[in-house]
Length: 76
Image (cartoon, rainbow, N blue to C red; front, side, top):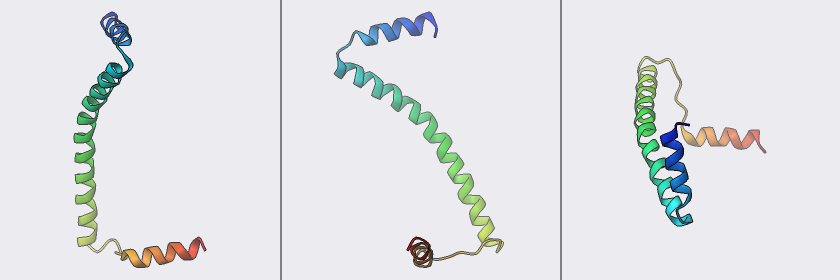
């Protein structure tokens, strides 16, 4: 941890619990924004890959009722 970071943490720890929670929430939200765009991009790529597999006939689509019925049989 850098000196600057340590100083910020020390100041933050002097805040009330509510204020610390607010700071923590804002910091975490700022991380989520960056992660969300990466996750969104990865999901879009995965969706595209799967759509192409379906279009090429490489995978068999199974409706949800069939999948659920098979799961119930396995866990009955």
